[in-house]
Amino acid sequence: MAQTPAAHRINRFHTQKTHQHHAMNTVPEVTPIARPVLVPPGGHKKVLLHSCCAPCSGEVMEAMLASGIDYTIYFYNPNIHPLKEYLLRKEENLRFAEKFGIPFIDKDDDYENDRKEWFAKAKGMEFEPERGIRCTMCFDMRFEKAAQYAHENGFPVFTSSLGISRWKNMAQINDCGHRAAAPYDGLVYWDFNWRKGGGSARMIEISKREHFYQQEYCGCAYSLRDSNAHRKSQGRIPIKLGVLYYGDPATEYENR
Image (cartoon, rainbow, N blue to C red):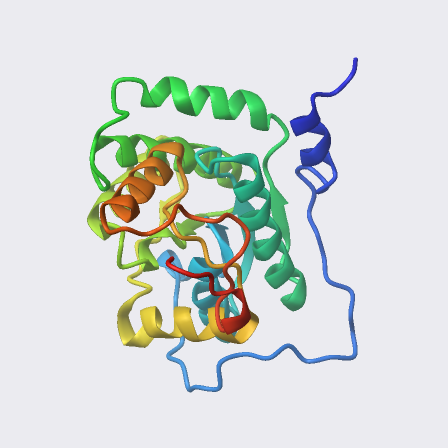
């Protein structure tokens, strides 16, 4: 059966495979600071990290690496719209994971149906504000998949990079994480505050050092709509997808 154009493009990125970095002779650059040793719940050393994007996960990844935590990235984000933006965010995340040899679970084997499910769940919530019930639905959907994967693949702990962003409600995210873990005996959601101890600032530092793609809205179609409406009210042009990169002045565009 012929694939749709979207499915064809998704399959180019090695759907639901674990990607490993094989460069053996280089030492990846990390933020040169003394870090406290992090201990996941129960003293476990194996963690599944749900990641939303490279800028948010960069600091979380380096912090867990510094503590010797054996972790795997789980990328499942059917909220991200449009497809071009989804692929940009995923590829940046994959690039950074490969740099450190971190396994990357690319869970977009049914991307188009997952997108349809996300929009169906969001029906009636199209005009809810950021941090409202639509965001709770979105976190629930993604964390439920992450928790299921963790349970089925021997991860006693899962966590997420979502909470490091100052634009997010950390309590809302943690509630969704604990709720997703609850049905599975022995599974815990790690609600560590990744912002503390300068984590939020290092998130930006790492993004600039790595020249990560700089997304200009949360991710969903409604966030893009509302962000552009706000920009228009200020006399600014709509967001240009795939243009802006952290730490690269050459990618700045006029009147953004």
